[in-house]
Length: 428
Image 1 (cartoon, one colour):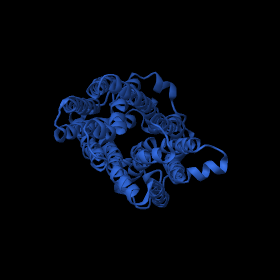
Image 2: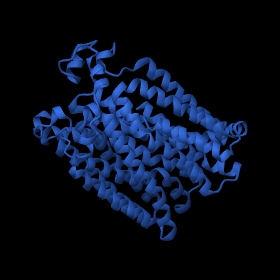
Image 3: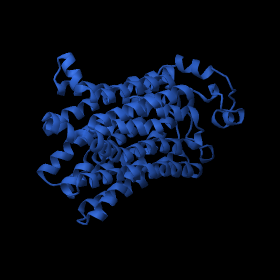
């Protein structure tokens, strides 16, 4: 959760600091858009390589390398002008390069955290644990707008990036000191706990690490699975909706709802606060339903409920003229979107427990594509029509996400040793 929160901080910081950077370097909106897009290119292109590496060598070393990468990237943003002078690049070129490398580092985080959950939790707790993963993202998003805005007002935008970098370096130290790839390798895990997580395993056993290094990711099985296509296409639609809140809520609060910058910063935290609260609930809910109806129906019920409520709230909130009611409704829509999204991450583990980093990386790549499309299409529709229409489109695509998840059979693994019948409710 802490790693996910720091990831959100280092991803969102530029969107809040962008106004000050624009003014200092006389960038226009299109130029800032190029700096934003540089991060997304690094983030999208390196999802699958990082996920593959994690499945082979484990999340401890992979996450250490990735966090170091975006920690350096955060600190380098404050030094971008000096870096530009020293290398002969323009300030714009330096910032784009730095944000690209920051995106490369952050690309590893979500898939690696999913692999940690796959290795460290019992089957019956995957949904709730995946909800905690998304909760970390929500907590980081909740605090970032207020923290970055306050720091910039008092110390300037460069100091804000230095703080982000320092926090990321602190996370590296804690993670490297405390974490292990498997519970069998951790001194704090006892025999009784191991029987809950991995029945039949013994403390000190290194067999899982050895086996993981020998296995090859079954890409063909993944790409010919109806469940996988339902998962990744559904998450592409989820990404479209998520990036509306992620990229445009602050702008919407200022330009459309007429709030001042600090009030807008506070309101920008609201969707992420709702995500932090509701994502663990969504995972817990699907785990509970799964124990009665089976994992396929448990995950599907949670996704339908989350996406359905999210759609209704977004439609109603975008058309209400009373800002103090409309903004909380849109924020709650974001929360219920993540109520559902936690189950996409849990389904990656359900479908491919031994290759969950690779599958979740593939899924998150499609989510990034959906986000990139969302960033452009939302602006186009808002400019040429109006903001209500752009949010209506996001609502329709949110429905599509839930419908596509209907093809996901979370009760049946695609792995060779789990190709049997759909599990009964009592086994989930």
